[in-house]
Amino acid sequence: MPIKVYFDCYPCLMRQVLDAIKYLELDEETSREILNETMQDLIRMEENVNSSELAAQIHQHVIQKSGGADPYLNVKEMSFHKATEQYDYARQLIITAPDPLEMALKICTAGNVIDFGPAADFDLRAAVEQVLETPFSHFDYKEFRSALGYAERILFLADNAGETLFDKLLIEQINKPLVYAVKSAPIMNDALMEDALATDFPDFVTVMENGTAIQGTVLEHCSEEFRYKFEMADMIIAKGMANFETLPDEGERAFFLLKIKCKPIAALSGIPYRSYVVKRGGLLNHYS
Image: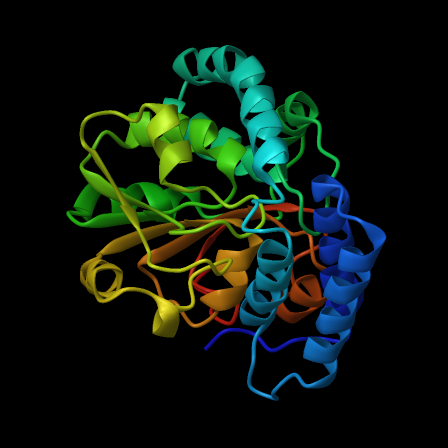
């Protein structure tokens, strides 16, 4: 069951809308209409809605009012370009490391600094250097490596567009057939099919859409095909805050790779704000 909307989510959601308006350079009248609709959505919010569903609903106003434009298209291209600039550096760190899988796991997690949601400014090189110098607040590497040894049906849940290149670095070290799941339509800077294809994953990777334009993984909105893959997976690798937030009850088969960018989630999980995490099980479960 995804986590509810906290009061701290309101200004965050409003800021996301303001950012989208800015990226599209919309006129004042259209901008006011979008903001009014957003505020009405917040006022009329149903008690059982979660922040990912609410954000998707709000971002649809922006897309509809702008004639179907993707507000984050340019910033996704920029984040992919930034990741490309650091790709060779990160790959060299991995292939020269005493334990390349462990290094790839850390660097893949560092890639989660790429964001235009809760924390818009990022320095990818600095993030990589930080994860090398600073211990993770939670790093279930032994459990990850053990689970990987037995896994036969791996499902990798993508997060942001620029992160796909850093996901590729980990996937190369995993070196086993897996399904890589992306969104079916634009929602902020989440990875889409075209982003995954541009990443040029190894041949053993099957890319699929999850059937939604909602951040994270809200299973009730996903396609039947994706839900089947999710149910059958014996190992799930989930990137980013939104997956951590929308899959809080996931058990031992799931590993969450992220930077904690949200204070309410930090408080709920007991994991320090802004720390890097590789955690077995959802935020409501503890296995180590």
